[in-house]
Every structure is written in structure tokens, then in C-alpha cells.
Length: 453
Image (cartoon, rainbow, N blue to C red):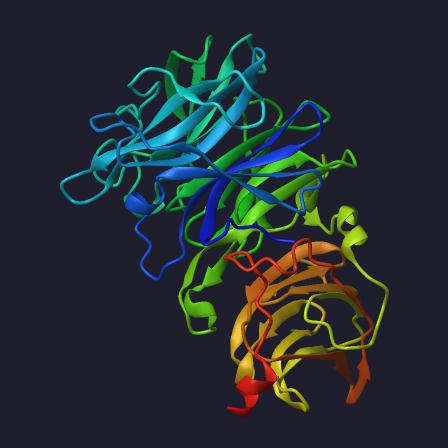
């Protein structure tokens, strides 16, 4: 259900779809470590392929940092490939080095490939194709000029690029913005004033542009302070842009939109892990999560729902314990759903989801709060997904909460409401690679020997 390459972790990524329907993901990759130095460890892109957006196979490294003295000599960060002729053009973030105060110097470069599968890249020259313009954006300390995303202009025959930047007119802690630039040929760009500058965001990362069926536009952006992502909509690329609020909860980051094999529009995103695979470990870079269905309507804010394409990976209903499972619970007043306990034969809850209709929370061992949210409307039902340590909750079908819990033992799910407890039928999740032992392997939970030791 999730993906990271053997021995490594995943950060920001891009999605490609070849003419034969095969998907490829290009992603930042680096070792899984407590002190992650992204300037020295994120120096290459990994590549993996899939036919269904669920089961991914690693295909090795596809791109790396530049030669000494070039704008991308220190690191290469987030990328975006687009079709160009019979091949592709890829815009990517290059890091030259550090400012005197230790801030990364960022710019955007270009590479071409004659292929459409995410391989065969050759750089366009030795310089970046677009850099931050000091008239509107920070260019030295605390600068930002990364995460390019390129689409066809809706008012010309040219192209539009959006970039994560820092608004020079705002304080650093509130200057996160989406910059943009225009081009007729992909190689010469004119930087424009900020496209979106909310004034209350520290970093607005990984901007994504998606043209909707009615010709309007959707922009998704990851929010540094909340570690989730939000949505904006506009009738045209140049705006006006309307902020539509959070789309992905805390823990979901770096979204990308892609057509699924069934023709629906889905969002994939990253999800973190914790250092040392313990609840006390700091959050660190993680892996790619499974797709969510993107639902848009002119009269409603965009939302993410359960993607029916995942149903093929679910088994028949059972009341037996299952570490990887999906279960549905109707809400009748306050409920508490126990998913794991602290011992094999019961004991206290080690993983519990609670809801009183509008407030939703997840607790770990000894009632420690792992995640919580307040729903915009009271919910009538929850859907809960657990894959090892990873937990997702959907309220009335909408993705609203996610967290990690490395504690406890799988037991039959039970619901307690109004003083009564009953078992919840679940559908076990079939894992694409259950025996693969690497950084993307699913945590199996404590063994019986652990509980006796």
C-alpha cells in the first residue's frame, strides 16, 4: 500500500504516466536516519514503476546532483517532468551551496529526455533557467526558490511555472508564497509577482496546478507549519485565487494529482515515519501513501475521499484480528474503537479511535493523544485503515485524520458506545509485497517473545 526504496526513505516526488499506462514515480531519496542532512543526502532521484498506483517496484536511481561549480552541485530537490515533443522536459530544484548563515541557495534547472518513462535525462546547459527576482522575492538568507511545477498557459501558447518562494514584502515567518513565471519556449522565463501570498504561512511548498473539467484551476500547496496541505481555486491561472482550506490532514504532505487506471482523478502524497520505529521517535522522512479520490465541485471545497480502486486489495469480512485492515463504524453518540491492545490477551488499549460526532481523536498507549481534529460537520460514520503502524480515518468518506502508532498487538476491533461493547467486522488488507524487507516493509508489531521479555 505504501512505497519507499530498499534501505532509503522518500520525500517529495513527481508522477508520470507512459503511453502504455505504466506509472513512474521520481522521488527524492536518502538514508533513513535520526539527523537527516538534506543538503548531503538528497542528492539523487529514485524511480519506481506501477500499473495500479498501489504496487510499486523499485527501478534504481534516475538522476543526480551536478558537477562541482554548477548551480546544482550540492543537492537536487523537487522536480516536475512534462511532455515535450516525443520526450519530456524536467524542471528541478538545484542547490548551489549555503549562504554565510547556512541557508540553501536554490534555483530551478532544466533537463531533457527522449523517453517518457522517467529515464535518460540530460541537463540543459550548466546554469539555471529561472531564479528568484529580488523585486518580489527573498534571494539571500531565508530565500526560497524550489519545487517547480509547469503547465500550459491558459491565455497564450506558452507555459506557466509555479514555484515555492519567500515574499520579500513579508516577515520570514509569514512570507511563504507561490511565485510564478512565464515562458514561450521552456528555456527563457520571465518572473512575475507572487501568484498567491497568504501572509500567514511560513512555507508554501510543492505547489501543484490541476485544470478541472470546467476549465477552472485547482492549486494544492503543502504548508510547512501544519505539515498538511491546502487547496485554492481560480477561474483562470492568473486568478483571482480563493483559499478553500485544508485538503490533507497533518502528516500528509507533498501532494500530486494523476489520472487513475479507472479514469478518476486521485491524489498521492507522502507520509512520515518515526526514528527507530517507536512512538517516542521524532518524525522523519517516510514513504509514498496510497491514492485518495479527489472530489471537486463548483459549489463546495475540494475534498479527498476513499478511492474505490483500493477495494481490490481488501479481503472478505472477518471478526478475527488483522494488523492490516479496513473497518467501518456507524456513529451513535460517543464511540471508542479499540484497534490494538497492550498485550496479546487483551489489557488496555494501545491504539484507539474516538469520536463524539464532531471531535475525532486517536490515542496510543496509556491514552497518549496521537492525533485529533474537529470535523466541519457532525459525522454519521467512520472508515478506519491500518497498515502496520500507519493509521487513516475517513469521516463520511472524507479523509480527515492520520497518525502513526508503533505499539500494541492486533486484536479483533471492538466498539464501545453507551456502555456496551461489540466486535467490528473488518476487511484484511492484502499487501503488494508482504515479504519485502526494506525501509518500506510494514511493521509487524511486537512479537510474543517481546511481550514475555
